[in-house]
Amino acid sequence: MAASSGSSPIARRYAEALFELADEARALDQTASDLSKLKTMLAESADLRELVVSPVVGRDDQAKALVELAKQAGLGEIVQKFVGTLAVNRRAFALGGVINAFLAELANRRGEVAVEVTAAAPLTTQQQDALQATLAKRFGAKVSISPTVDPSLIGGLVVRVGSTLIDGSVRSQLEGLERTMKGVA
Image 1 (cartoon, rainbow, N blue to C red):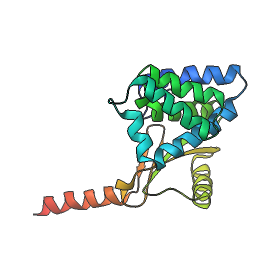
Image 2 (image 1 turned 120 degrees about the vertical axis):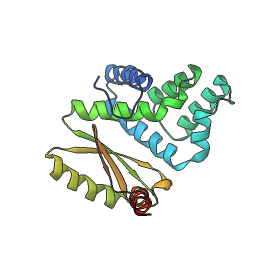
Image 3 (image 1 turned 30 degrees about the horizontal axis):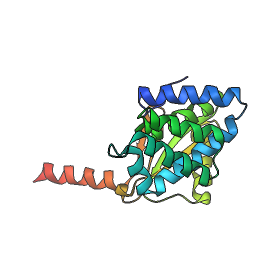
Image 4 (image 1 turned 45 degrees about the horizontal axis):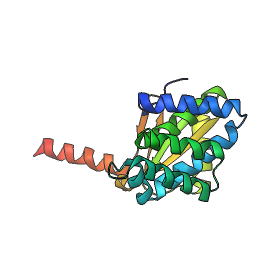
């Protein structure tokens, strides 16, 4: 499995195991769809993000909560069992990295370019489609976008393609302006 930028060795190993399970079950597309849905849920829910990283919540309680949440969201059995396994093994904190690594590997095997896009607010379908078309033209290949939300960006986008990072966020522009002003003073 190809290494995914921004994901830890733990996340890549779990993503590889999940990929093999989904491939054997001939459920790669369903699993990718479920993981994308789960990624959106993580981006939109601070409570879910807290549950995933909290050392206070016991592994069994965390597993039960994540499995139940996956069921309620209509995610497939493979992803339901997988999030439970992550929690029981105390690796739920790596869920975001696992999702990114899985989606990047799937895109790689399909000859697509995996692009991680971080925005200050959730992107609309129209915005994602326009961005996908622009990036496809730029990279000369089909593009698979994995969107995430980070309100601290203030505005703009951060786009990561492999080891290339394009930071067009307002936060980075303000930080650059601050560095410039400190250099002048």
